[in-house]
Image (cartoon, rainbow, N blue to C red; front, side, top):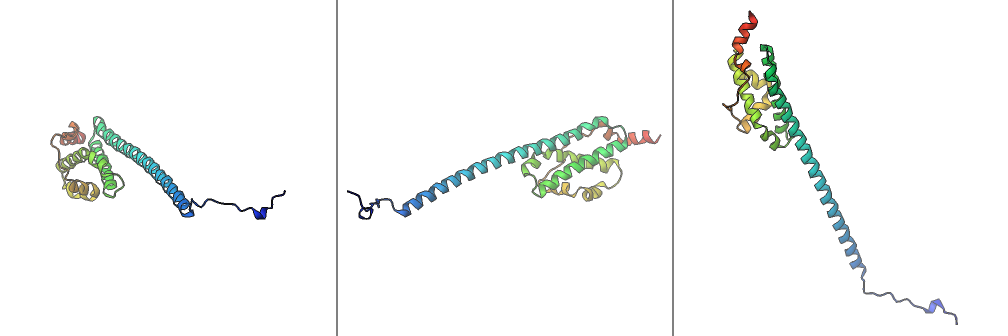
Length: 176
């Protein structure tokens, strides 16, 4: 009464083909991979938006701080430093935008600050007494390129600090 294993044949159901199993495994793998790519893309997008927000906030704070310094201008040297610092800042932003290092939307949003820079250059032309536009184009080439490319124009409503408008009088007072 012993069962001889040689006499026993196992019957494996042939209903599941090996190729069907391979298709199911590869399909599951593809779905998992697609899901992982989607999650990764979403995370990158959220991080990018946060970075852009930080950049925008930083640029805006820097420019606003520079604008707020106009209340401490006392001398012609202060006025010139204020103008140079402001133009240096917008030139840096223009450089980053032109070279694709920051999104165009950020630089476009800051367009009003670029227009204010044109007021500063007009002030330099009138008050410093030289053809400053030629010098300015050498000193801040990215700024001028950006203004030209995005058609940024002087905004007559932007007002320079009163002390800068009285530059000639300030210069006379300093020389006495």
